[in-house]
Length: 67
Image (cartoon, rainbow, N blue to C red):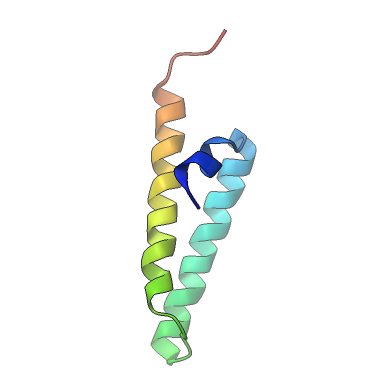
């Protein structure tokens, strides 16, 4: 996902996306250990998505309340 797409999500959707993405990373790591992983580069992409989501979540928490 691109940062622009992530910023368009609501807070609730953002948390759900973070949970889903972390679960996907777990599954990819499991596949990697068992030798079933088809695209090893996907792990890196998922890690970047997680970092983007966490960064945007932190930005929202640090920003003053909008009025």
